Length: 308
Image 1 (cartoon, rainbow, N blue to C red):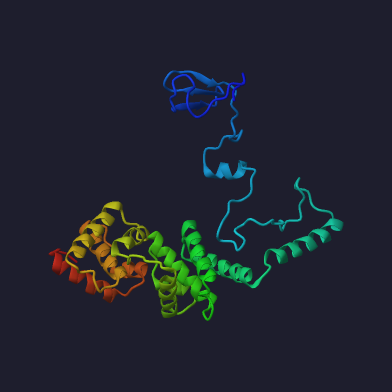
Image 2: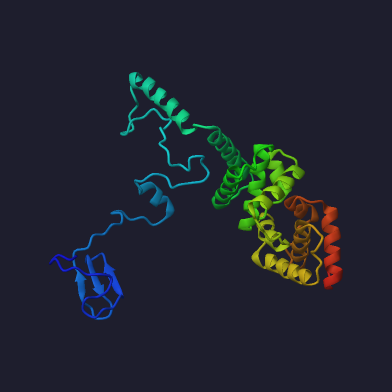
């Protein structure tokens, strides 16, 4: 309803057009077809401050943190800060400090009220630790937390270690987000057996109906190339070699990291940014023998001449 008390809908009362523009600078709603000013006293519900990057937005925002699956209560419960400061930043008096300590202790107890929440609190802390060690982005952590929560809801944790299911959830999230991490990397970060993680991953993916396409050697090229400080054209050449190899089915039955490392090694030699087999092997987490075997197969089948 406008200032004069005339009620309007989402269409222009003059021409019936639904193409309306809200001009917050003039506080008007204007019809784009006939130019009629439908309302001239609208309210801007946005913030009164301006921000130009994510850091400024986080500093100026006066609301709480967004919901996250990385916390057992999704970050929706009240949190008492660990610093002994009041709302103005001054130190709390010793008399008040004992009271705040008791409140903080009871608040922590209330947040974790049953065995399921205790399980989630421990598991999600472990998940964050393992994911941070292998430099996973936040969206992968969130998806891994969702996978773990679904496993808890279906009772798939019983009889298995929390660490094993957590590592399997991380591996599933990496596959889903196409952020390539090998089972060996996750096993090293979580201090678990590679076979145990693989077995648990297959079990929970089957029970939860998670169908993921297998990783290809191309998925590993950007990561290995950036760690070796290779230029974009070298990575593009490696991807080109891998596409030809996939057409001739040279990648089937072989580890994707070995094939990717061999293609990167060949591309670096061909384009004059040579990296040694030892350097490539260390980044890919394989042996030099594997690289030698794979690059010889690629060179012979694809007719690539390499001058060593």
